[in-house]
Image (cartoon, rainbow, N blue to C red; front, side, top):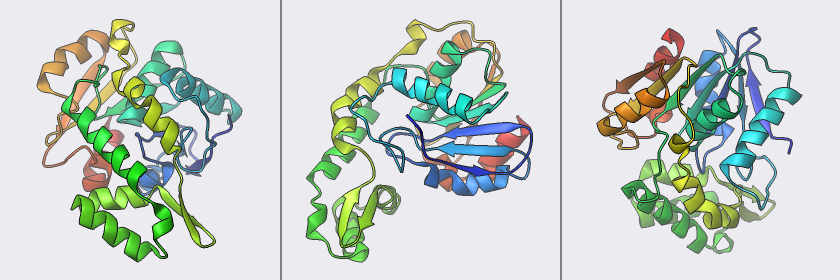
Amino acid sequence: MELFFRKYGTSKQNVIILHGLYGSSDNWVSIAKILSKHFSVFIPDQRNHGQSPKSNEFNYTVLINDLNNFINKNKITNPIIIGHSMGGKVAMYFNYSYPDIAKKLIIIDIAPKDYSNDKNNEFHKKIISFMLRLNLNDFNNRKDLSMFIFDKIKDKRLTHFILKNIKRDRNNFSWKINIDVINSELQNILSEDYNKKIKNILTPTLFIKADKSDYIKTSDFSLIKNIFTNSNIITINDTSHWIHSEKPDELCNLILNF
């Protein structure tokens, strides 16, 4: 599968940024532009997201293969791989499958564990359930669509996030993401637990935790350290899971320092 991607910068040191579930490369453009002063930054849309092709297959095995094919096709050498949420799991599991490719890993607000029984599972179910119920044919303009979504969920950031997944073709709105397949495979994506398979990862790795998020709990620190033996865990204060939009400068500083 040939992934859509954006590229910024011309440095010899390559960086790949992997977005999270329901995300896209578009969410990381501002971060990529900052980092492009120092790196060549590639931001692919993962399959079933953004402008990349849709597929009935959606699991970490195919996402890892997509990333490997993307690296080979674009002749990306020695990359630093940054992954947020689901993208962080792809980065971790890719490094397990292909341990000699990444120079470093930066994992943003996700741990190598099963999230299927976590309260964040309910959050994802709620989001996708709302998306599935939303009849895009009922709307003639983006303003009305935005007002409707905000009225239902009462969250500006989440409203913006959902709108990012909606495109307009001529007079009709449609989903950018493959919502039906993502819905059917959601539990597999949340439950995948590679910590039962991976150990002794020596690749230098930085885990970045958001203090108002519980995707990484303090109780997960020992798990992370046991698997990623050459890792650090740093917390960004006063931010939620969406670190890249709430604290972009602080996030970029951590990335550059690492």
